[in-house]
Amino acid sequence: MEIFFGVLGGLGLFLYGMHVMSSSLQRAAGDKLKDIIGLLTTNRFLGVLVGAVVTAIVQSSSATTVMVVGFVNAGMMTLSQAVGVIMGANIGTTVTAQIISFRIDHYAPMIVGIAVMVWLVTKNRKTKQIAESLIGFGILFIGMSFMSDALRPLRELDAFAELIISFSTNPLLGILAGFFITVAVQSSTASTSIVLALSLQGLVPLDSALPVLFGINIGTTITAMISSIGASRTARRAAAAHVVFNIVGTLIFLIFLRVPLYNIVEHLSPNNVTRQIANAHTIFNITSTIMLLPFAGLIVKTAKKIVPGEEEEKEGIKYIDPRLLETPTIALNAAMRETLHMGNTAKKSLHCALRGFFNNQEKEINDCFRIEKIVNEIERELSGYLVKLSNTDISKKNREIVTGLFNTINDIERVGDHADNIAELAIYKLENNLHFTEEANDELDGMSQLTIEAYEKSLTAIQTLDQNLALEVLEIENKVDDLEKSLRANHIDRLNKNLCNTGSGVVFLDIISNLERISDHSSNIAYAAMDQIKLNTAKG
Image (tube, rainbow, N blue to C red; front, side):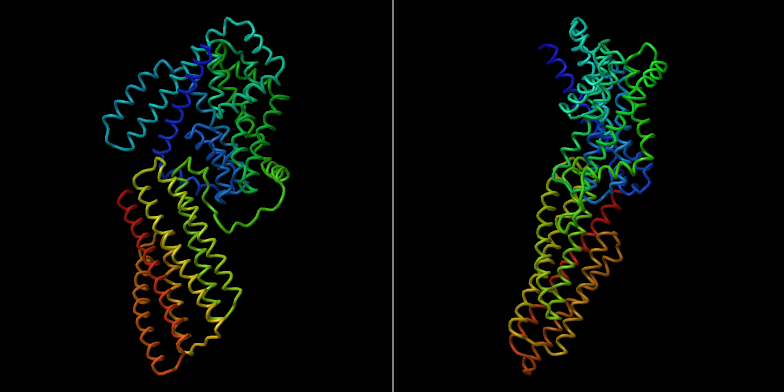
């Protein structure tokens, strides 16, 4: 039991240190992580690079592939892009093992001590984040040292030695051991660290460690597979591609390249099993990527056969995904895209309502009602997502952006409500066979066009953060206000002259009132864009 609790405590420190280091590095990277999405093209080589870099930051290939599933599910990444990133993630996860193998654990307390002093003294946010990452780095090595010391008594157990030796004579046992350890701790980096800790005590030779590494490589796919449950078909295919890639790579090395790999790493680091294991881990993952990258298209086809069928077109939530919350800056980018998607959905609802009104088309009116429900659904999901995002460790600037998004989606939801009101008036017009004078129709059409222009420009302003466009929205909003007063006076004059009936008059006044309020919400969105522009300018 003493060994068990010692390993458990050391593993706990290791995982905690890895989490602190990872989260601090993510905060220090800030919006640069968000920019990675813009780098992703159909160029798979670039995808491999991105996957390696992100995994080196988040310290877990499982975490990266879970994020990839989230990206694909949110429509922010194609399946072909995902394959490249997954391959890169396997390379990135070798960084920690390489660092551990250089045995700098003796300096870990000093690193933690200096980093804590810097953290306490400095007022600079970026410096604090770097200090936090070093604190996590030091704790990681202290945990590693605890694990290694706790495992020392196993050297006296002949049964354990026989079990480890059996991994070399029966690689399947080693693969299963690596697989189940990784499934249990949910981190391939942590699993590899356990193998390294055993090697530090001379408990695991290289030929026994290799099958365990292969099993760890397969076990790391389970997290993404679990994460893909309930996701889109394409996201499930991304998880399947991860499984295919890791299993094929493992089989190639197990059957053909295990002996060459053994010879190479033994030559590179003779008499140092820990370095040999770390090098084997790195060479295995880099070589697998080089060999299988040209067959990425075949991996995609295989994933599509594993998860068959056509992807359904999503009308509701499109970009946000809970998996992205692990990386707040990217989650914020998804929330901003979802806000724009919600805005465009509300615009469809408004167009349907107006077409239904002017053309007496019941189908358009019903489409408006249907789409407005989708707007409400997006608003509910997005609001909940923003609450979760605001509870993550995000910067003050990003927190203010989240607050602005709350206000914007409220304005968009109100635009959908007013579109719904116009559709209700269109139904009333149809059912009561109401007619308008040519002058009234022209006035309504003119105000509708001006209102739509204001709303569309406000959405573009919030997307592009164009100050001039936002100012144009405010100018149009003033015109709509003046026009609403003018049309109200004109219509009352027509009523007094008996040029139209009372029923038509009430509908006319309600229509222009709803249009004027849509214009008001458009100006609110424009102001939100201007606030974000000021925020970006002030904070850099």
